[in-house]
Length: 133
Image 1 (tube, rainbow, N blue to C red):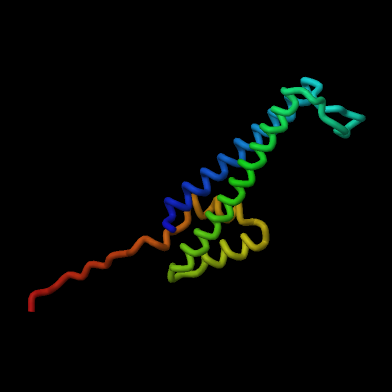
Image 2 (spheres, rainbow, N blue to C red; image 1 turned 90 degrees about the vertical axis):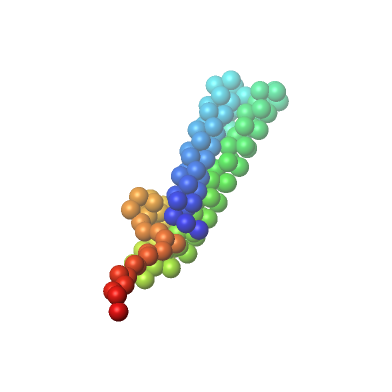
């Protein structure tokens, strides 16, 4: 997987996570504001059986699926970046991405990689000047 593909996947899945979170919060806010949720103190104990309430439940479920899809996209981008950097001669980026990802700091490592990281699929062409014999 090339770095531009990894970058598009990383940014796209990040947008999906943020969009899903905004959609989920909007559905929760609208459900609470319309008294669709039965509350006992800070706890939700039930849902009013109205069309709007079930619509907000459906919107929240879709938002959760979008966030899960975005999280899977983040994981695939990380795997792609690790494989991409394994092809490099200098293994610093590979080790950095692998270790930080396994220690749950993969988002920070991926953000740095997307901004300044190398592309392991890019071939460097060395041209040699031929001298006449």
